[in-house]
Image 1 (cartoon, protein in one colour):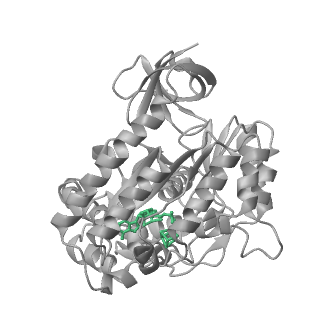
Image 2 (cartoon, protein in one colour):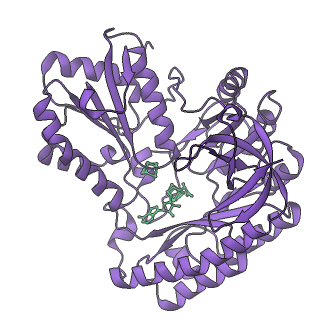
Amino acid sequence: MKIRGSVYFIMKKYLIQTYGCQMNEHDSEKISWILEGMGYQLTDDREECDLIIFNTCAVRKSAEDRVYGQLGELKDLKRRNPNLILAVCGCMMQREEAREVVLKKFRQVDIIFGTNNIHKMPQLITRHLETGQTIVDILEENREIEEDINANRKYSYKAFVNIMYGCNNFCTYCIVPYARGRERSREPENIIKEIKNLAENGCKEVTLLGQNVNSYGKTLDRDYRFSDLLRDVNQIDGIERIRFMTSHPKDLSGDLINAYTTLNKLCKHLHLPIQSGSDKILKMMNRKYNIDDYLKIIDKIRNAVPDIVITTDIIVGFPGETEEDFNETLDLVKRVKYDAAYTFLYSIREGTKAAQMKGQVPDDVKHERFQKLLDTLYPIGLEQNEKLLGKVVEVLVEEVSKNDEEMLNGRTDSGKLVHFKGNKDIIGTFVNVKIDNAKTFTLEGTIC
Ligand code: SAH
Ligand code: SF4
Ligand code: F3S
């Protein structure tokens, strides 16, 4: 299918505002590639835009509210520049309720599309330009995987690579399976080809993306698993670090643990969302593992890779969560000693099972528990970072620090963020940094 270069070639300016996870960030890189093929040029100034796209996230109500707020702000801009095209896409647009809100309250929006039909964007823009109508094009489900879309990646030395799409897990709180459809894996040959190409163009680090990477391969017509993919990516010349997001504890098998010990490029970091420390809540969440199973995995992986960094996701205030359940979450955090955690207040998502559950936790209780959780997590995170004091770590230099032009940011193999003084010429290279100072979220050091 011809996706690029099919519409018109005038230098027009565009901007994409991206919300949500890495999946969305990478979709925006694909959208950007399509637009540049149509002759659009990136700008960061809304005032000079011919096209503004909001790539939205639906995972929590707060993410959706932010989009509504921003769309409201654009009313005035649209009045001043009637030729401006406003498009909204992404996970939120897969939800009928959210589409209706946008169509009713934000009449300045010209094009709505979803997560399954990014490739149709040139046609949608043309249709809007030809008819002047609001175009809504949603594909509820896409079993096909579009292999013809490339991506304008933000960095040359690191890249996101989709290995699978969708999710079949239906955790009872989560909108993602509704927004992203059923799980489907990309053919390994296509993934390998993409990564080889990236490596030939200077990419050193890849992050393999999927909602549940451990179940990679289930939709393929042969026996080829995530650990097989890791092994094959590990052999690609030029790639020096392999990361992945996200793995589900219910599918974390021995072959993945072995991969950590046998594959030299696999980064020593495991992000393993626990969500709650209470077996009762895990059951209500439909997570399909219990705390005992989870702790066994943690013990196995720490035995195999003693210095592995472990991070997690935790939801506070799931329906029915009592003080006792919550205390079990605090106990688990102390037991596992996470290096870091993404923490969330439970947010009701219409259409999910948990939205119908009795025992919704009042906001003030959620906030109080949330604060207690942070107070437990932070000292542990600091303690874990302090273990690196005085040590020399290898860092991939990523960018100039936002607050200080003389400082650079980089990441250790285990994913920790390090600040150090240096010249921007070394961005994209590996350097050794001696850690002089440890904070809760970052490390500071000196190149040596
Ligand atoms: N597929 C990934 C996560 C995708 S969403 C996984 O399973 O790990 C990222 C995180 O958002 C989830 O891990 C969960 O902690 C959080 N989350 C999802 N739905 C939520 C909701 N309704 N309220 C609060 N947090 C939520
Ligand atoms: Fe959501 Fe669960 Fe799927 Fe993750 S595994 S995307 S939390 S349903
Ligand atoms: Fe990601 Fe948000 Fe969609 S977390 S998959 S962008 S709902």
